[in-house]
Length: 72
Image (cartoon, rainbow, N blue to C red; front, side, top):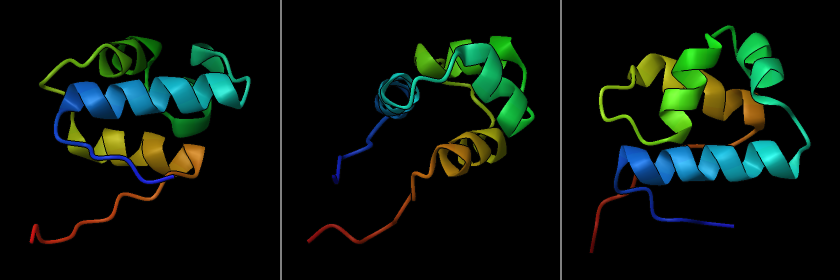
């Protein structure tokens, strides 16, 4: 499924939904992605200052590809 990710909030919402779909607790995902639980919680809640490298690690851990394309 493709989704428009125009903000940290939309990325966080996607991550939270996918984590729950896979039945993974926040603490488990944080451990798998080697990030802190606080970071993951803030990311899922749309904190705008999330570190992009960690965001990409979490997305990758969940099997979500971030693809860039030019708008028409």
